[in-house]
Amino acid sequence: MIVLYILIFILVLGVLVCFHEFGHYFFAKKAGVQVNEFAFGMGPKLLSKKKGETYWSIRAFPIGGFCAMAGEDEAVSLLNEGDKIRIVLNDQNRISKIILKTTDEEYKDAPLITVEKFDLLGKDMAPLYINEYEVERDALVYYSKKNEVQISPYEKTFFAKKVWQRFLICLGGPLNNLILAFVTMIILGLIVGTSIGNTSTLGDASDSAYKAGLRKGDTILVIDGYDIDSEYGFSGGQTQEGSFAYAIYSSQKRELPITYLRDGVTYNTIAFASYAFNNLGISSYDDDITSENAELVKVIVETKAALGGTNKTIAYQANNGLRNGDIITKAYYYGDSELTIQETKIIETWADLCSFATSESVLSGGNVALEYLRDGGTHTTGVFQIYSEKLLLSQGYTIVTKFIGISAPTKFSLGEGLLNGLRYFYRAIATVFSTLFLLFSSKEVGLNSLGGFITILNQVASTSAAGFINLLYFIGFLSISLGIVNLLPIPALDGGRILFLFIEGITGKKINPKVESIIINVVFVLLLILIGYVLVQDLIRLVIQLK
Figure (cartoon, helix red, strand yellow):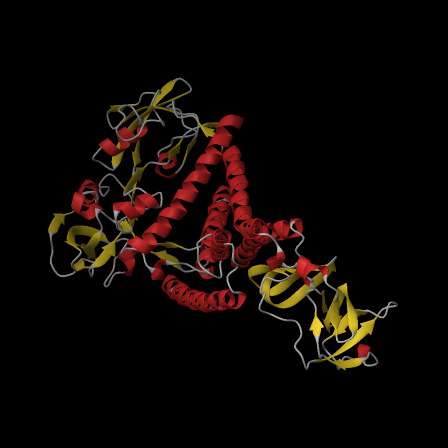
């Protein structure tokens, strides 16, 4: 399975990168810019095919890609005075090919010259020349048998185009990512269908509901004494009396007596609710649940990971941290301090832990410690930082989730499906922006929270294991992330180039190419350092997962 996940990861990354680079390519060609190479991956070429003036290639490392446009770096010159080259002349005695590899056997008889003067740009359509020879405007530059590119006169270069054309070329990559995400989310909305909220009839039953005997098509009448109103069944929230959420969350118990209707016959059963405390990194242990032990706060803090090893929560990673099957007996809240206990809560039932997790002080984040039972002994975790409500809500999570595994029936509706796709698209964009905001404004999120290729691979594996729908959403979300991050006004990213173009548009003057090149190169080095740091954090997380 791991090999399959890696292949899916390469495919997903390939689609995102190719869409991004094709956006640059499309607007470059529309503007008349020469594109020398369109590559997927980095490093040595594995496959390459030339079509027109462009090499279409696949490179060794599938971790990116590029669209190499003529004149992106105005400071770079193909030749220098004093260089020795060989030349191939056509019938008009003009240079049709410039041989940079002068020792190549194939061109050993071609004239060898020393470059004394040259102009391979030819601004305002001025003739191109090397020494006394005129150069064709579509002449080739020969590096090796597998690498020869067409020269790029001024009119075919990136920097020769108008500001608005260069703006569109730079914008094309991120724009294509957003378009891909939009289409993906619309398809997702149509596939998922529209939930029918105003019903108490089940679309599906899983987890505890399935174990309790509930099945698709059953109509739930009562949950733990709370009557279910079909008008609000799945559509009403926790505060809407008569809804499933209201009944499940209002009950202070984990054991939920349920009355339901099937084929005109009324039945009674018992389902055990499951919990997830997203701020504490704790979920309920469900495997050996009975009426006698249902209220014991027996937890799960470690789950199987798609790439092998396990996913470990913050409660697990704390010093002397929790392990699966531990029973929590007491909770301590420290606030921003790690030394002084501000609140103590005795935990005897799941309702007690809910009360602690949703208390006003704990919702603000900070530090906690948990006392627990293991192997007949009492232990206490080290103090560890929990997630605040603000952070979790920005990522689309609730503080506490209590559920029994029932879902609403769905129907296909073109209009509603399109609207749901728009909602998915908007929520994903909002999540990316809120994450970026938290990265610069929150003490809870820092550089060590960033994920690189290993994190993305792990997420691709996890979402693939969870099903096609989850993978499709992740592709859309990742495409949005790539598009928005590339629009940040950071030199070496598309947004940085757009910023330079705005300055040029306002001042009417181009930024000195050498200065721009230096700025971009310096920032690029800093980005490489950041990527290296993120990779180290990725590896640390992977080691923790595989322990």
